[in-house]
Length: 194
Image (tube, rainbow, N blue to C red):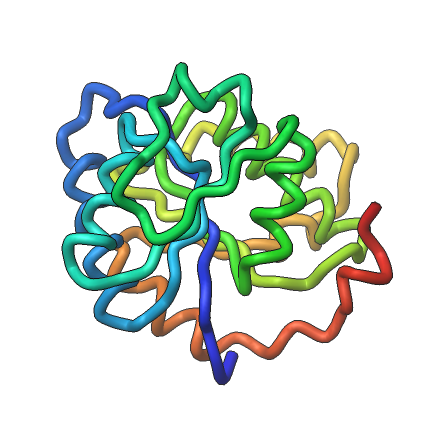
């Protein structure tokens, strides 16, 4: 990709038990700020979500948070980000996050993160978009997910090419160099998504 203006990050609204994941989120926020890439995320000020947003802002970056109204109070929306948009529901949130992003990066998280990850891969499988998707598999967090996908391929519920719809890296420092090597998206999602 020749130009990367914004990245959508899916990650947990909790910290989890591994301190390395908090460090990962903070480091990636610094990288986004240094590269002048806007963070697009779920808008919360809790867990890894809050960590990456705070890190991006504190290092001079820009952050767009998009949160549905029913989570606005539960997740304690981040008050120091560049822009916060409150939408009516989760579907609007997902679509708006998609529209504002050049690529999708997945950090450790729970079932919400897993839901977003599966959905964005599924949309790509259906040729609704061809934006890059990258999992940061820090401390092998995503190994069970990758093993599940291998099992799905083995049992012929999908084709092996499904595994090429996304990329896997170990470290946050690997994300931007990889994105710069990938081809420009060619599909116009405005003509494909609902």
